[in-house]
Image 1: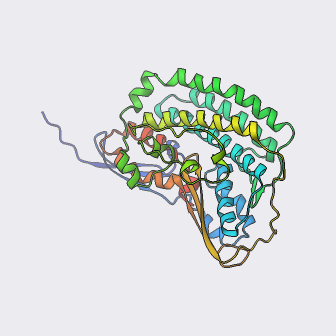
Image 2: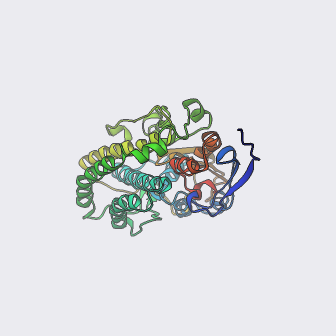
Image 3: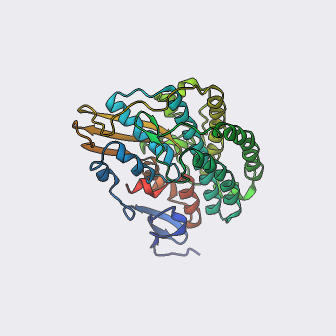
Amino acid sequence: MTLYTEPFVLNIGPAHPSTHGVFRMKATMDGEVIVALEPVFGYLHRGVEKLCEERTFSGIIPLTDRLDYLGSMTNNFAYVVAVEKLGGIKVPERAEFIRVIMAELMRISSHLCSIGFLLNDCGAFMTPVLYTLREREKILDLFDMVCGQRLTYNYMRIGGVSQDLPEEFLPALNNFLKQIPAYIEEYEKLLKDNEILQARTKGVGILTREMAVNSSAAGPVLRASGVKWDLRKADLYSVYDRFEFDIPTFEGGDCYDRYRMRIEEMWQSVRILEQALKYIPEGPVQEKVPRLFKPPVGEAYGAIEGPKGELGFYLVSDGSIAPYRCRIRAPSLLNLTALREMSIGWKIADLMVIFGSIDICMGEVDR
């Protein structure tokens, strides 16, 4: 006997605990199966891009911390790269090494949160995320040493960083690098072949290579679909050309591959950090830049490979102390564009897993 049902609309959010922020999904359901999905944004809009146009170029740096607040240090990095392109500023070599160290520590920290929260979304409530937060705390201790903050850092500066590394930082980093491989291996033993994780994620929420490219996906989401694209290699910035590391990819494009992608990227970040620790030079950490910096009239786009993908700032200067126009390319927003296609045909219980595997932060979606 065929059972006919009427489609109905299910609102998820805008304050649902699984939506990683203030985000709403309008799911049209046929029973438990998703037949249509409409993402709804705008509940967290703070007008950051317009605020940037009313501040000095250096005064914008603290605003960038509030975008992806789990990747604040890399937000600083992307912005100052754009300003330095606009103003033709050369950064001292030691400062570039420090920036790379901070960016790779931030990448590991962000991926730890992503993996822990994804497992929460899969139903393994709290235990896995407490494991990952354990290591994240060690990274936050390192950031605390450098700038006195554990979430919003405001550490990067136009032309360098705000201050040199304290004496105890490099020994502490070395100690962390000795510990972290054992922790990543621990995650692998617990999760890689876990039957429940595989059942919830393998073959679920597939993002094909073509769909990933057409939707401008970036970062681990893009590379999990088989596209070998990473700005640290593809569009060299800072001193990443000095380091040996690989760009891992997977071909399945499902939730499991997106989880595996972040594990593999943590291993590569450890490789980069070990090299940076070994070869970091002495010298100044700040190029002299006027407090009221006025870049020449023009425009520039600066981007880096953030934890979630390509994070870029487009700036237009009219010669004044504030940008005439500021536009942010936020990877979380673009990675969400394929959510509808990834979710149709799956059940409502799978939606949270698919959504969690994208790893977004609403702070940079609703700029």
